[in-house]
Amino acid sequence: MTNIQRNPQSTVALATMQMPGLNGSRWAKLRSMRAVLPFAVIIVLYIVLAAAPALFVGAPSLTSDLSARLLPPGTAHGGAVHLLGTDQLGRDVFNRLIYGTRVSLVIAFSAVVCSGIFGTALGVAAGVLRGATAAIIMRLTDIILSVPFFLLAILTVVALGPSLLNVVLCLTFVRWPRYTRVAYAQTLEAEGKEFVRSAQAIGARGMWIVWRYILPEVLPSVLVVGTLELGTMVIYEASLSFIGLGVQPPTPSWGAMLSDGREYIASAWWLTAFPGLALFLLVLSVNMLGDFVRDRLDPTERGRLQ
Amino acid sequence: MTFFRNGTFRYVVGRLGQALLQLLGVVTIVFIILRLTGDPAQLLVPQNATADDIVRIRHQLGLDQPIWTQYLQYLGGIARGDFGFSYVQNRPALDLIGERLPYTVELAIAALLISVLVGIPIGMISAVNRKRFIGRASMVFVLIGQSMPAFWLGLLLILVFGVWLQVLPTSGAGSILAMILPAVTLASLSFATVARITRSSFLEQLNAEYVRTARSHGAGTGRVLFGHVLRNAAIPIVTLIGLEIASLLGGAVITETIFAWPGIGQLTVQSIDARDFPVVQAIVLFVAVVYIAANFVTDMLYSVIDPRVRLIAVEG
Image 1 (cartoon, each protein chain N blue to C red):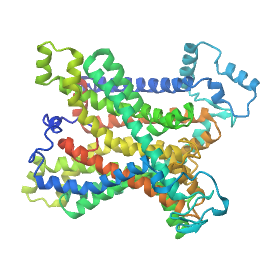
Image 2 (tube, chains in turn purple, red):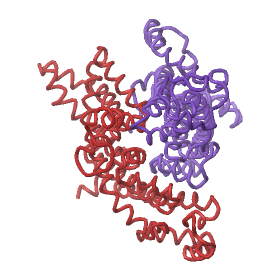
Image 3 (cartoon, rainbow over the protein chains, first blue to last red):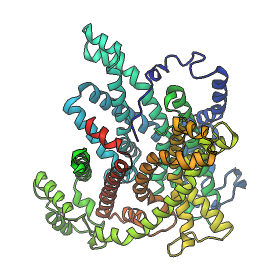
Image 4 (cartoon, chains in turn cyan, green):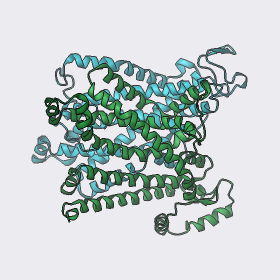
């Protein structure tokens, strides 16, 4: 994609966000907030479910009960109603779905935070130090971005062995360059600004300038990338566990549940429909929120891809 | 010769050097990932291999030699087209890829056709009718497409068309009919991207001076859109499509698994299940090579379509 010359005012949009009249009328802003509100509520709901699943469904359903296998949604069995049915081992689908939220959110959040911090640090370092350091860091981002992400992720997990920690490590490893590129461009732009040069002129120390003046200029864009990445990370985690490279059973995860569902698709549609719906709703909400955050923080790139 | 004088030659050579550097980098990273994880011989042999097998393979792979020698041998092997050996199947990994590749390419082309034929009109509609209901509705459609995990879409399609309606085959390759569901699933990955880039590219062009001029000369909406705007808006779209071809090749892993499509995506998952890691490694390298090559060719095409690119690249 071509390099977009950004509106110099866009990076101060964060500080002036609450001021009416900056990005159009106050009415339009209220309306766009109202449109995104349901999705924000859904995300909060997911976070609550992930934080305290036991409040909603009791203890995790890990043990198999073959007398209760493949019961359709709404069936009562052994004194309990299986709202979303049971799977091939007789475990409650609703229960596993709720516990799966935890795995999905923890991995996606951790991956975004780790790759965000690591990538931003490298990008700012490249922008400040310039020269050979910048050349090496930026070439490295080129290289990693030139392998299709999913295959690189597969290779890394295969090499490290599948586990929650390794999935986070591997997603961090394949995604940090996205933040580095943005942070690098923003750092270069910030360094050209009057106040950074003034600070340099009065003899402020390098680390102080980075912390006090450059980082606040870089963070809004990094935040935008991070919110947009969150949905992608959720899908990646599910895709990895779909092919057996995610967290290992019996820990429930949506991708693995879908993979089981595939085997029983002709006889038990609920094994496929519900985990996928949970995944889709989460990704849709995160993407809607991501678009909203981007429009708020970065009006010049409204409707753009990256 | 203008070819040398206007900087094109320098641009091509510079870009080629960059592509080769990327290739070297990818090979190095794959080498490091495999070495980081302990004994590659353990990783490369089948699970039922004996201790003697491991010693033999370790010697065969040169793992008893210093790391730098190993690295150079690895590079040399790849330069000669040696992408590794499958001890599970007892054949070169590249042969296995070669057998499966036509299926994946076939599927990727079908998916690309679908995403272009659906994505570009939808992007155009949403750009032209930005403030109207139809424009918003088409963007909602795009957003849903973007948030739909491909493997869930694939499973839903199987459920509806294979299990309930029983009108389309849901596994294997062989007929046009069998290709429909996997191609639609794979297309869902790229159609949203194509639609979004079309939309933003059109929005940019619709404000341009020449659009107003054409309109003031009495050109109708159809003529303005197809006669003028589409040609100017096409450049970023063409670039994107070039990149999508390569990422479809990589993105086929899940789709092919769901539909039992015998391409390299299915080969990847089968190799993981069989612990046939040399094949997994070879696939990653192979797709990376294709990806870098596609990037390079797209950039070359791009600079042919739009001469500004090579000028900026040489001077800037």
